[in-house]
Image (cartoon, rainbow, N blue to C red; front, side):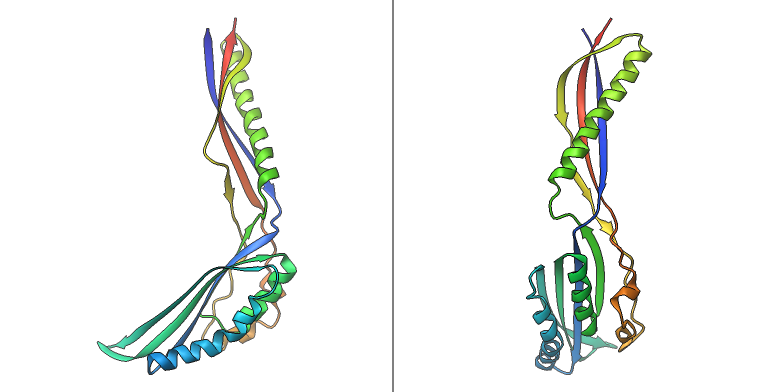
Amino acid sequence: MAEVVTRGVGRVERAPDRAGLSVSYSAPAASRGAAIAELSRRVTPVEESLTAVGVQVRARRLSVNAAWENGRQVGCRAEQYYELRVDGLTLLEEVLGQLIAAEPATLHGPFWELADTTEAVREAQRHAVVDARRRAAGYAEALAARLGPLLRLTDGDAAEVAVGYGSAMPVPGGAGAWESVRDIRELNLAPQPVTVSATCTATWTLLD
């Protein structure tokens, strides 16, 4: 009995319902203690904003390093890094406003995400099966045969979710440059679609 094996791919797009952000703050000073104290002062209002319902701190890291110039230590620098997840566009605008008000050293995002991918994955899987059958039917026709029943179906790689990337954040031009961002809406952070994909391998019989 002849067989044909085909691979199907299915993709769907969904509007995101949450976003990821990464942000860091930096404070230079003459000593480690002074650098940490200055960093603490700067991130205190940030920490308060992260207690809001709908904001999740996925990572928080502190680093303190010596600052060198021409082979000579000239002070120290303390840095605090955050990786955040925020639910909802309205809350995202509020959180971004508070993060920017504290003048971050770096800010990346938003990276658009789906809170629940179950429905999107299932639809992508349906598209993948339809694609695999369409390909098999094409081979059967090319061989002047009829496509028979499905023998085996193997799931491909785990369903992939392609994160939608928002518009790039403005690059500060120096101390106080973040102050030029008076309204978060000026950043044009329209949500970008999130793509969910699935693959499968199907084995079909070929009938005379």
